Image 1 (tube, protein in one colour):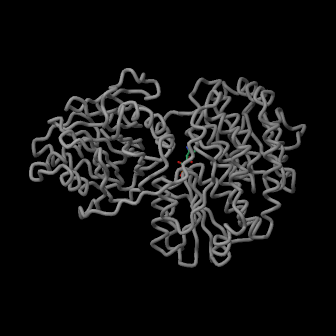
Image 2 (image 1 turned 45 degrees about the vertical axis):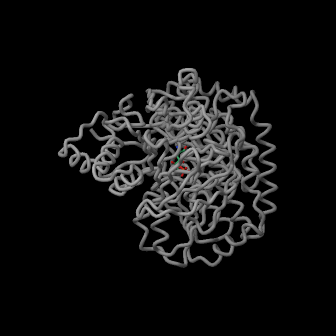
Image 3 (image 1 turned 180 degrees about the vertical axis):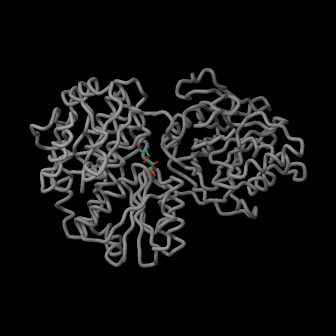
Length: 595
Ligand code: M6R
């Protein structure tokens, strides 16, 4: 059976304990990376005790976990094909019980390795590629006495992006190796946290040690040592103090993170545009000197990349082209040292986007990034790293990170023509309008609309020009949360085919600007209305063609930000009405760290 592990969270702890509870707390903060099963392994009374379960760790009582152990590792997993079982949950224990291992990534050559191991007499209990790593380490232990060396040698046989963490019973230590999937170490006195992100231990410490690809860490109760995973040579441990945002990890009275994060946009759009012209100067110079500016991202970030390119073209008359991260190989021959790439990512860990950056770098392209998560891979491999400063985004579907990216990109475009101050003012005004918009009265309007729409299966969203990417992002948001068929189109596409799908009562959302594009969008509204569609207009002004009007309060160049918010609210309230979990939509995870 083909097992596809999309992404997972890893957390290890050594300190004064209780290890299991600390790991549980860390895994709860990592659940955005996967939440279909979890496992915790601790060292207690000289043995490794493993607890695994299908479901989310958030629902597990701390009393059910060991309270004595002071060292352990844990994992929160997410799978699509088969295998959401206790047996497949990590960590996976060695045959003799002397070590246990958890992984984030995909062993691309796992079938060959497994075949070879089976031929050598090894048996497998789970369907995972992770167990292949366990058996491979056992195989290496036949000739290598030291578990650190055996783990390193086994790891070097793996293809793909993988990060592993291993609990060693005999030496009371944790071994971890990073390649591709993230790993960072937090240090607080004699307590060590080894985790997939800094957020998972943000409440404990802001002293961190970054792990580079192909680095190995060996953590004991008395300290940590780092090694080159290929050569085994020791490398220097550099402790950095970073500014980790620990705020707002709880829902603060909101029923879901999604609604909380939608509302937080009133502040996050302001945070995103706090860069001064001086701070932006190196980027402005690079853009001015570039032959072509490419913007890249995946999923929602690809739509912000599109919007940023739009702003560069239309506000600053810059030759800017947006590309999908996963389609970049088709453009590689165009890249030259005269170009720059602006990489957009919330997590900074998206595998498709990292690979796109690597391809661009091979061609000497300068890399500039706008990322939300501090200290992420993408920020570190960029020539210039900017942050969208939205704070932790916990809901799997991106909302505030998207609008922050768009706000930042529009600020850059405005700064290129000396208008950054004006744009910041518009953003402040929009922020205050949003404060008035995020009220129970508004939410009730969306609740009512959700009730009316809940039985419909097919929906369309039309936008154009500055709102084209908003139509795509709006449709994606609603798909993710409601599992309904929502399709976003350029309004111009309507007569070229899409109109065939419009039938009596088909809901069609039309993003209607006030400027010169207004007439075109109203014509589109009339055309679908003539075929019986139920027209839902989004924009500042109402119109007799609209069956429902979702009012926005757009200011100047802030239109795209303002217009996406109704879609976020429909996604949320329709999801709630349909009984989905808006924070954890099925089949998705926050950070797609493998290809
Ligand atoms: O972390 P990134 O911004 O790089 O993630 C890219 C996409 O995977 C992400 O935007 C995805 O589309 C979300 N589910 C959007 O809500």
